[in-house]
Image 1 (tube, rainbow, N blue to C red):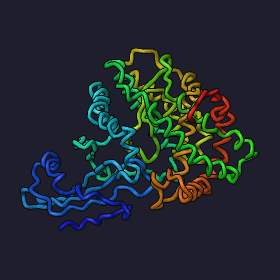
Image 2: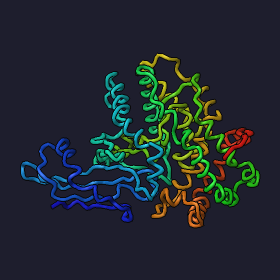
Image 3: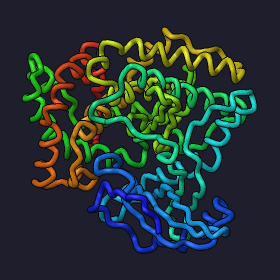
Image 4: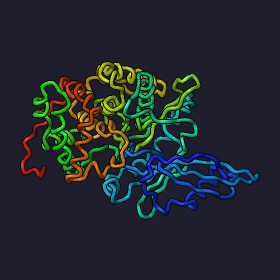
Length: 436
């Protein structure tokens, strides 16, 4: 039997009983034609707590008996929705798994095919998807190649990405954006659901309620970050009405701008790298395509740079990161023979300041960065983050007063404030009979 040592990075994860050997039989028959039967089946967590808040991610280990009498160890990554009581109901309502299903069935293969047919056969944007389905009950499941078998791994999310990792990750983002813009130019607009990302018309009320839950401890924590003149920042922090306007603004798309299919949730844990023998990066592959929306690439840039750059380069190299991305974007658009006017660097830099892109900078520092900077903890999950009670407040205060997070925010918050991006009075509106 296999001597492979199996690690389980989250022993508290409950694995549904229906995830069993029989489920994978047809997948194995197609992927491993010389396979006879499963000798051993071991499902474990694929990632530690705090790395993913919208999915259950498993690594499935198999010991297979082959036709020639040998045994073979095989692994897949299995992705499915959260249990209902752990946030799965809200995730299903958001429809993000349906969006990802379309990405793997239609768009990602088409984007890669654009490069391959033009002569860049080395471009791979996403992991190979071996199986994707929607069941009669409306549940959606994916089976992916295990990128760890090709030595792909995540960079430490707390440490962040150094300059070389940032450069290559921005290049990969530009490759994805360029292909999506060319695809739409050739095939017409994407379906209506791609007009919304984290925010949609349907979830505005839920988004505002979530803001209110987190807002009370976030503002309390701001006073302890070491911000110069902290009272100024606390006083100008958005209220629920302004936050609603920030969200609504994000639903507006400027047709005069260069637009693309944004990844929507691009940060260090949603990309994987492998390396050459000398330690240099070989390839980068993107994962998790649930939140993408049609809009300005500035949205992905604000989100990615805020969350993923290492502390010593995040602000120092901020404008340079935009340049690095833009140069690769233009190169890829030219290669794919994009016929519309190419985006100018001046225009891209200006789009970072536009009101309809503000949401992604604010979402990054308000929602994601506190969790990203929090060490692995079994309480680090969507349920703990959003529960509206005293225990939820205690957990969120731990997140928002975490010294690693505070150390980033004492420089990052003023940076965005001084650029006008966090001037939330810009979103003042007189709302008549508003329920918000």
